[in-house]
Image (cartoon, rainbow, N blue to C red; front, top):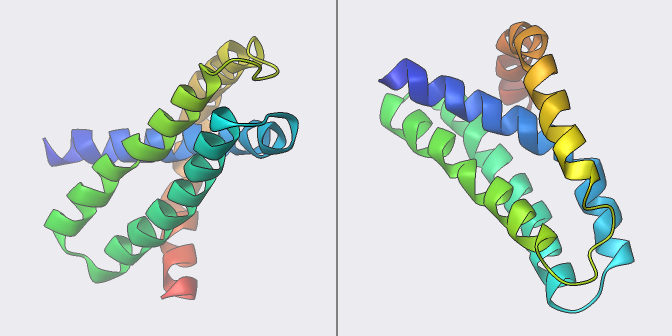
Length: 123
């Protein structure tokens, strides 16, 4: 079970990383409530990344479990902000989804070595 949660956390991290350029671009192209939710998604991604890397450094399984599940928050906010009226480039999301699926396996090998190094650098 722990391995499945860890793999899901890494997948959601990769998906958030793939979606982040589009999300940041949408901040400047939207207004009103979708813009607020998009800003919240970017801030949540930064905070969850910091917590996720901190959990890697502490080697506490419960903390790593919690931060792996926490990646649902920024992805959920990104998709929620996308549903707003006047949000540009909505058709691009499906292409980003397929890009995430097809690049995850090669990226997982890279992240296995890169993420602990980033965590050690930050913390």
